[in-house]
Length: 406
Image (cartoon, rainbow, N blue to C red):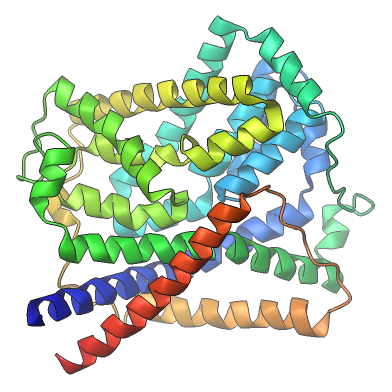
């Protein structure tokens, strides 16, 4: 019993420490994302994304880069752009960029995994787009694209205010109140995923033995970094399965990715795990609701194939350049997460900024319309996640109380 209590305390201290390390990065990323979504509207984006293919892909990538990292919001935005005239390939570029090239994701990855994974994330995001573009050109699914557009007829999107330029908007208190509302919406979209993701990371770190990872990912968990091609390929294929079982968004998955890498999973396998947020069942279901099941399955094939190719290219390119990261640099246990350092002061600053934004949007300017959450979500899945998150809070509170007495 005493051993369980120690592991429980260790798990919850790790989960809380992980979140404390990442708090300022979440806040910074969502502030930037909220500002862009208010000051650079979707309607302006889609006007430029239906022309020349290369230009539209480039613009789709850029607009994805400056948008939200939430997978569900990215799906809704990509759908809206596609419906309003953006080409299919530019919509896919936007979708991949908005879940792999965004600022906040890079910051979180740098905290937990180091610079090689940040480079891998951004270079990999571009490779995912290029491989998907190549596959679309080779397959040329005209009938599927036409059917998907028809499937969107009758779907109604909310229109945002286009009457002001961004220069005028940035000087308006009401527009900053909208930034506040969007900031609140960003947190509303991810709080369940982040809570469950960080809690699971702590539980796995404390309770799951290395032998489990060695069985799941061949030849991992033993300090080995010299993998054969087929071992690397197996890690890449298993990575999305692990992501599917957790069904957590990209931001919540990063501490789990750090855990996998610290347990000896290959660089390629961890990158595949990180890239897998768009090949899980909730995403498949939402795409089916938007475009029909045939197009949804085609997008799944497209993204999964691109994921495999990208992970392989990254691994062998980094190996050739002799910059593969060292798993021993990822520290999961015995870390002093709450020491007085730059993280402590950054967290205080962004907690204060968050409080000001909440005051502006939800108390001072109550007249500003509440932003709507765009993505259609399964009520069943959302309820499961909500109650799972609430259970996580009880679990965390109990473990941290135990930590005080042992």
